Image 1 (tube, helix red, strand yellow):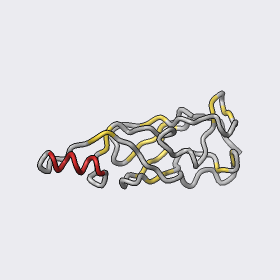
Image 2 (cartoon, one colour; image 1 turned 180 degrees about the vertical axis):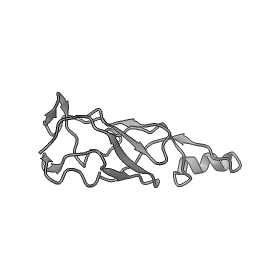
Image 3 (cartoon, rainbow, N blue to C red; image 1 turned 180 degrees about the horizontal axis):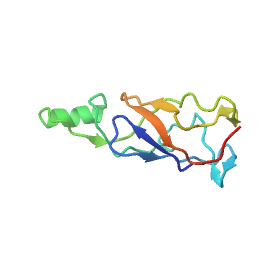
Image 4 (tube, helix red, strand yellow; image 1 turned 120 degrees about the vertical axis):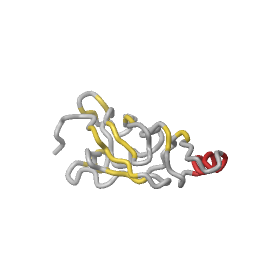
Length: 120
């Protein structure tokens, strides 16, 4: 919880939010797993800048071809690879360098850890 990630088509970094469903806490915050990739976990990257996003494509068409970024609503795959050695609730723990792919084509990467604790 509290780590940051960025999208190759987003305008701003996002803070990872984690529900305490795994009941594993690190430094007083819920720990994330590779399954934490929904809108609850990664709400937005500000605006989206790719024509593969239908709302951006529609807005750009309405602007006669001028790229018109629209609000980002990421649709992510589960993160990969996660930790090869640490499982939380049966899922690999989320780690810096893990990536997810957005349905609109962006690549999302964990850039700042939510914890500095080393998981083993």
